[in-house]
Length: 316
Image (cartoon, rainbow, N blue to C red; front, side, top):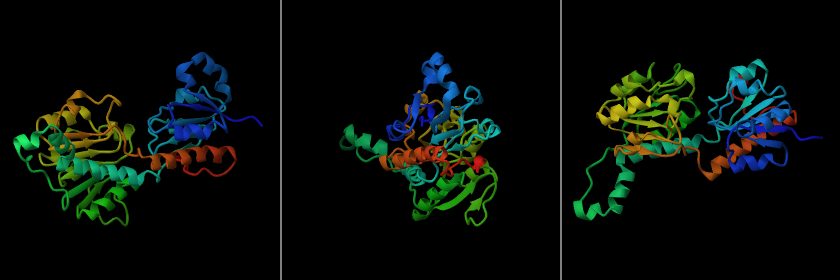
Protein backbone atom coordinates (compact mmCIF):
# COMPACT_ATOMS: atom_id res chain seq x y z
CA UNK A 1 0.00 0.00 0.00
CA UNK A 2 1.40 3.40 -0.99
CA UNK A 3 2.28 5.87 1.71
CA UNK A 4 0.11 9.01 2.04
CA UNK A 5 1.61 12.16 0.57
CA UNK A 6 2.16 15.07 2.97
CA UNK A 7 3.03 18.69 2.33
CA UNK A 8 4.95 20.55 5.01
CA UNK A 9 4.23 24.28 5.16
CA UNK A 10 7.06 25.24 7.52
CA UNK A 11 10.53 24.11 8.46
CA UNK A 12 9.42 21.48 10.92
CA UNK A 13 11.20 20.62 14.12
CA UNK A 14 13.31 17.48 13.60
CA UNK A 15 11.33 15.99 16.51
CA UNK A 16 8.23 16.14 14.28
CA UNK A 17 9.80 15.73 10.84
CA UNK A 18 11.73 12.60 11.79
CA UNK A 19 8.48 10.87 12.73
CA UNK A 20 6.99 11.47 9.29
CA UNK A 21 9.71 10.14 7.01
CA UNK A 22 9.02 6.43 7.47
CA UNK A 23 5.24 6.59 7.23
CA UNK A 24 4.64 9.28 4.60
CA UNK A 25 5.86 10.69 1.31
CA UNK A 26 6.91 14.10 2.57
CA UNK A 27 7.10 17.09 0.24
CA UNK A 28 8.96 19.72 2.23
CA UNK A 29 7.61 23.21 1.45
CA UNK A 30 7.46 22.31 -2.23
CA UNK A 31 4.76 24.93 -2.86
CA UNK A 32 7.28 27.64 -1.93
CA UNK A 33 10.49 26.07 -3.23
CA UNK A 34 9.45 24.61 -6.60
CA UNK A 35 5.97 25.58 -7.83
CA UNK A 36 6.29 23.50 -11.00
CA UNK A 37 7.13 20.34 -9.06
CA UNK A 38 4.40 21.16 -6.56
CA UNK A 39 1.81 21.39 -9.35
CA UNK A 40 2.63 17.80 -10.33
CA UNK A 41 2.22 16.34 -6.84
CA UNK A 42 -0.57 18.61 -5.58
CA UNK A 43 -3.34 16.17 -6.62
CA UNK A 44 -1.69 13.50 -4.43
CA UNK A 45 -1.35 15.55 -1.22
CA UNK A 46 -3.61 14.11 1.48
CA UNK A 47 -2.22 15.87 4.55
CA UNK A 48 -0.55 19.11 5.61
CA UNK A 49 1.95 19.33 8.47
CA UNK A 50 2.92 22.67 9.93
CA UNK A 51 3.95 24.68 12.97
CA UNK A 52 2.02 27.18 15.04
CA UNK A 53 3.19 30.03 12.80
CA UNK A 54 2.31 28.28 9.53
CA UNK A 55 0.03 29.80 6.93
CA UNK A 56 -2.53 27.47 5.39
CA UNK A 57 -4.83 29.77 3.40
CA UNK A 58 -7.83 28.84 1.31
CA UNK A 59 -5.79 29.41 -1.86
CA UNK A 60 -3.39 26.64 -0.86
CA UNK A 61 -6.14 24.22 0.10
CA UNK A 62 -7.88 24.90 -3.22
CA UNK A 63 -4.82 23.47 -4.98
CA UNK A 64 -5.07 20.21 -3.01
CA UNK A 65 -8.17 18.31 -4.15
CA UNK A 66 -7.25 15.19 -2.14
CA UNK A 67 -6.50 17.03 1.12
CA UNK A 68 -7.92 15.20 4.15
CA UNK A 69 -6.25 16.62 7.28
CA UNK A 70 -4.12 19.50 8.60
CA UNK A 71 -1.83 18.84 11.57
CA UNK A 72 -0.29 21.81 13.37
CA UNK A 73 2.52 21.36 15.89
CA UNK A 74 1.53 24.23 18.15
CA UNK A 75 -1.41 25.35 20.22
CA UNK A 76 -2.06 28.34 17.95
CA UNK A 77 -3.59 27.76 14.53
CA UNK A 78 -4.60 31.29 13.53
CA UNK A 79 -2.66 30.94 10.25
CA UNK A 80 -5.00 28.16 9.11
CA UNK A 81 -8.19 29.09 7.27
CA UNK A 82 -10.35 26.82 9.42
CA UNK A 83 -13.56 28.00 7.73
CA UNK A 84 -12.24 26.88 4.35
CA UNK A 85 -11.20 23.54 5.85
CA UNK A 86 -14.61 22.99 7.43
CA UNK A 87 -16.37 23.71 4.15
CA UNK A 88 -14.57 20.65 2.75
CA UNK A 89 -14.86 18.69 6.00
CA UNK A 90 -11.09 18.70 6.41
CA UNK A 91 -10.23 18.38 10.12
CA UNK A 92 -7.56 20.63 11.60
CA UNK A 93 -5.57 19.49 14.62
CA UNK A 94 -3.19 21.23 17.01
CA UNK A 95 -1.24 20.41 20.17
CA UNK A 96 -2.91 21.97 23.21
CA UNK A 97 -2.37 20.92 26.79
CA UNK A 98 1.16 19.59 26.49
CA UNK A 99 2.71 23.08 26.51
CA UNK A 100 0.60 24.71 29.24
CA UNK A 101 3.22 24.42 31.97
CA UNK A 102 6.09 25.60 29.80
CA UNK A 103 4.32 28.75 28.58
CA UNK A 104 3.08 29.54 32.09
CA UNK A 105 6.60 29.11 33.44
CA UNK A 106 7.99 31.58 30.93
CA UNK A 107 5.23 34.08 31.66
CA UNK A 108 6.24 34.05 35.31
CA UNK A 109 9.90 34.18 34.32
CA UNK A 110 9.33 37.29 32.19
CA UNK A 111 7.34 38.88 34.99
CA UNK A 112 10.15 38.31 37.48
CA UNK A 113 12.82 39.28 34.96
CA UNK A 114 11.36 42.68 34.10
CA UNK A 115 10.19 43.58 37.61
CA UNK A 116 13.43 42.52 39.33
CA UNK A 117 15.52 43.50 36.27
CA UNK A 118 17.34 40.18 36.27
CA UNK A 119 18.89 40.43 32.76
CA UNK A 120 19.95 44.02 33.45
CA UNK A 121 21.46 42.96 36.77
CA UNK A 122 23.41 40.21 35.03
CA UNK A 123 24.86 42.74 32.60
CA UNK A 124 25.59 45.14 35.48
CA UNK A 125 27.82 42.51 37.08
CA UNK A 126 29.43 41.40 33.81
CA UNK A 127 30.31 44.97 32.84
CA UNK A 128 32.08 45.54 36.16
CA UNK A 129 29.65 48.28 37.12
CA UNK A 130 28.82 46.82 40.56
CA UNK A 131 32.34 47.46 41.86
CA UNK A 132 32.64 50.85 40.15
CA UNK A 133 29.15 52.30 40.69
CA UNK A 134 27.83 50.44 43.71
CA UNK A 135 24.44 48.79 44.06
CA UNK A 136 21.81 48.93 41.33
CA UNK A 137 18.64 50.98 41.88
CA UNK A 138 15.86 49.20 43.75
CA UNK A 139 13.38 47.15 41.75
CA UNK A 140 9.72 46.16 41.93
CA UNK A 141 8.30 43.41 44.19
CA UNK A 142 6.25 40.70 42.45
CA UNK A 143 4.84 38.73 45.39
CA UNK A 144 1.53 40.18 46.51
CA UNK A 145 1.09 42.27 43.37
CA UNK A 146 -2.09 42.45 41.29
CA UNK A 147 -2.13 40.25 38.17
CA UNK A 148 -4.46 40.60 35.21
CA UNK A 149 -4.72 37.79 32.66
CA UNK A 150 -6.05 38.46 29.16
CA UNK A 151 -7.44 35.06 28.16
CA UNK A 152 -8.13 32.61 30.97
CA UNK A 153 -7.87 29.42 28.94
CA UNK A 154 -5.77 26.41 29.84
CA UNK A 155 -2.51 28.35 29.82
CA UNK A 156 -4.05 31.35 31.53
CA UNK A 157 -5.26 29.12 34.34
CA UNK A 158 -1.79 27.60 34.65
CA UNK A 159 -0.35 31.11 34.98
CA UNK A 160 -2.95 31.94 37.63
CA UNK A 161 -2.05 28.82 39.61
CA UNK A 162 1.58 29.90 39.69
CA UNK A 163 0.64 33.45 40.60
CA UNK A 164 -1.34 32.16 43.57
CA UNK A 165 1.90 30.74 44.95
CA UNK A 166 3.26 34.30 44.80
CA UNK A 167 0.25 35.52 46.80
CA UNK A 168 -0.87 37.66 43.88
CA UNK A 169 -4.46 38.81 43.53
CA UNK A 170 -5.82 37.65 40.18
CA UNK A 171 -8.35 39.09 37.74
CA UNK A 172 -9.03 38.31 34.10
CA UNK A 173 -10.85 39.25 30.94
CA UNK A 174 -12.14 37.23 28.01
CA UNK A 175 -15.16 36.91 25.78
CA UNK A 176 -17.28 36.15 28.81
CA UNK A 177 -17.00 35.36 32.51
CA UNK A 178 -16.18 31.73 33.18
CA UNK A 179 -18.50 29.77 35.49
CA UNK A 180 -16.92 28.42 38.63
CA UNK A 181 -13.93 30.78 38.46
CA UNK A 182 -13.31 32.75 41.65
CA UNK A 183 -11.11 35.41 40.04
CA UNK A 184 -12.59 38.83 39.35
CA UNK A 185 -13.84 39.27 35.79
CA UNK A 186 -13.60 42.50 33.79
CA UNK A 187 -15.47 42.87 30.49
CA UNK A 188 -12.63 44.58 28.60
CA UNK A 189 -8.85 44.57 28.55
CA UNK A 190 -8.80 48.29 29.34
CA UNK A 191 -11.01 47.83 32.39
CA UNK A 192 -8.75 45.00 33.59
CA UNK A 193 -5.54 46.93 32.91
CA UNK A 194 -6.70 49.77 35.10
CA UNK A 195 -6.86 47.47 38.13
CA UNK A 196 -3.58 45.53 37.92
CA UNK A 197 0.18 45.85 38.22
CA UNK A 198 1.06 43.15 35.69
CA UNK A 199 -1.01 42.45 32.57
CA UNK A 200 -0.27 39.05 31.02
CA UNK A 201 -1.55 38.41 27.49
CA UNK A 202 -2.30 34.78 26.62
CA UNK A 203 -5.25 35.05 24.27
CA UNK A 204 -5.31 33.36 20.82
CA UNK A 205 -4.12 35.33 17.81
CA UNK A 206 -6.03 36.01 14.61
CA UNK A 207 -8.18 38.85 13.28
CA UNK A 208 -10.49 38.80 16.31
CA UNK A 209 -7.73 39.77 18.74
CA UNK A 210 -5.50 41.89 16.50
CA UNK A 211 -4.23 44.90 18.48
CA UNK A 212 -6.48 44.04 21.40
CA UNK A 213 -3.76 45.58 23.57
CA UNK A 214 -3.75 49.13 22.22
CA UNK A 215 -2.90 52.63 23.41
CA UNK A 216 -6.07 52.79 25.52
CA UNK A 217 -5.19 49.59 27.37
CA UNK A 218 -1.59 50.70 27.93
CA UNK A 219 -2.74 54.07 29.24
CA UNK A 220 -5.03 52.24 31.68
CA UNK A 221 -2.16 49.98 32.80
CA UNK A 222 -0.27 53.09 33.81
CA UNK A 223 3.18 54.26 34.72
CA UNK A 224 3.74 51.56 37.34
CA UNK A 225 2.33 48.71 35.24
CA UNK A 226 4.09 46.01 33.24
CA UNK A 227 2.93 44.19 30.09
CA UNK A 228 3.84 40.53 29.54
CA UNK A 229 3.04 38.96 26.14
CA UNK A 230 3.31 35.20 25.64
CA UNK A 231 0.41 35.01 23.18
CA UNK A 232 0.91 36.28 19.62
CA UNK A 233 2.69 39.40 18.47
CA UNK A 234 -0.43 40.48 16.58
CA UNK A 235 -2.41 40.86 19.83
CA UNK A 236 -0.34 43.90 20.86
CA UNK A 237 -0.20 47.13 18.86
CA UNK A 238 3.58 47.25 18.75
CA UNK A 239 3.79 50.88 17.66
CA UNK A 240 1.55 51.90 20.55
CA UNK A 241 3.64 49.79 22.93
CA UNK A 242 6.90 51.39 21.80
CA UNK A 243 5.37 54.83 22.22
CA UNK A 244 4.08 53.92 25.70
CA UNK A 245 7.48 52.65 26.77
CA UNK A 246 9.35 55.63 25.39
CA UNK A 247 7.02 58.14 27.05
CA UNK A 248 6.83 56.30 30.37
CA UNK A 249 3.13 55.53 29.99
CA UNK A 250 3.95 52.03 31.36
CA UNK A 251 6.90 50.88 33.45
CA UNK A 252 8.15 48.07 31.23
CA UNK A 253 7.39 44.95 29.21
CA UNK A 254 8.41 41.31 28.94
CA UNK A 255 7.86 40.03 25.41
CA UNK A 256 8.25 36.57 23.89
CA UNK A 257 6.38 37.34 20.65
CA UNK A 258 6.44 40.14 18.10
CA UNK A 259 4.48 41.39 15.12
CA UNK A 260 7.24 40.69 12.58
CA UNK A 261 9.24 37.71 13.75
CA UNK A 262 12.15 37.13 13.78
CA UNK A 263 12.82 40.85 13.36
CA UNK A 264 11.52 42.83 16.35
CA UNK A 265 12.02 46.57 15.90
CA UNK A 266 15.26 48.11 17.11
CA UNK A 267 13.22 50.48 19.26
CA UNK A 268 12.35 47.51 21.46
CA UNK A 269 15.69 45.77 21.72
CA UNK A 270 17.56 49.00 22.31
CA UNK A 271 15.43 49.89 25.37
CA UNK A 272 16.52 49.05 28.90
CA UNK A 273 12.99 48.73 30.28
CA UNK A 274 12.09 45.61 28.29
CA UNK A 275 13.06 41.94 28.50
CA UNK A 276 12.88 40.09 25.18
CA UNK A 277 12.95 36.39 24.36
CA UNK A 278 12.82 34.86 20.85
CA UNK A 279 9.42 33.09 20.93
CA UNK A 280 10.67 30.35 23.28
CA UNK A 281 7.64 29.85 25.52
CA UNK A 282 7.31 26.15 24.64
CA UNK A 283 10.94 25.66 23.66
CA UNK A 284 12.18 22.93 25.95
CA UNK A 285 13.17 19.52 24.71
CA UNK A 286 10.56 17.78 26.83
CA UNK A 287 7.66 19.94 25.71
CA UNK A 288 8.62 20.11 22.04
CA UNK A 289 8.91 16.30 22.03
CA UNK A 290 5.42 16.02 23.49
CA UNK A 291 4.11 18.49 20.89
CA UNK A 292 5.79 16.58 18.06
CA UNK A 293 4.41 13.27 19.31
CA UNK A 294 0.89 14.70 19.46
CA UNK A 295 1.13 16.32 16.01
CA UNK A 296 2.39 13.07 14.47
CA UNK A 297 -0.17 11.12 16.47
CA UNK A 298 -2.99 13.14 14.95
CA UNK A 299 -1.81 12.30 11.44
CA UNK A 300 -1.35 8.65 12.29
CA UNK A 301 -4.80 8.49 13.86
CA UNK A 302 -6.45 10.01 10.81
CA UNK A 303 -4.76 7.75 8.29
CA UNK A 304 -5.46 4.64 10.37
CA UNK A 305 -9.13 5.50 10.72
CA UNK A 306 -8.98 6.28 14.45
CA UNK A 307 -10.41 9.31 16.26
CA UNK A 308 -8.23 12.40 16.17
CA UNK A 309 -6.31 13.06 19.38
CA UNK A 310 -6.68 16.85 19.49
CA UNK A 311 -8.81 18.51 16.82
CA UNK A 312 -9.21 22.28 17.09
CA UNK A 313 -12.43 23.30 18.85
CA UNK A 314 -14.19 24.19 15.61
CA UNK A 315 -13.68 20.63 14.35
CA UNK A 316 -15.00 18.87 17.46
